[in-house]
Image (cartoon, rainbow, N blue to C red; front, side):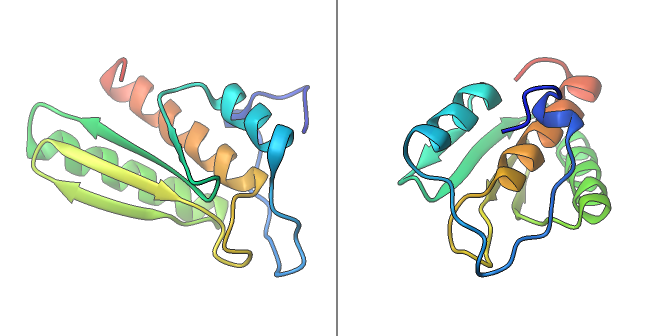
Length: 119
């Protein structure tokens, strides 16, 4: 784990089927570093639901996360509803979590905080 940069300042890196998944203590350390209300589900994926006051804010957040995903070359599931957006992320190439998933989640968190305040 790169200690010199916060997760949101790192870049997502492409994974291959040979990329080792995060497990055990290493996985827990990344989850603690993310520390933003993200749920670690079955040590397999991260999920978080953000609440908004209207559909426009939900849509704006979704667009921001989508643009970030394209820039990072790392994509996740985004469920857009009136007043909320649910994000779910894991690395499909390994069917598990990698560092890039935590980087992606931290970047999504940063987008939310910069535009909408605290979650």
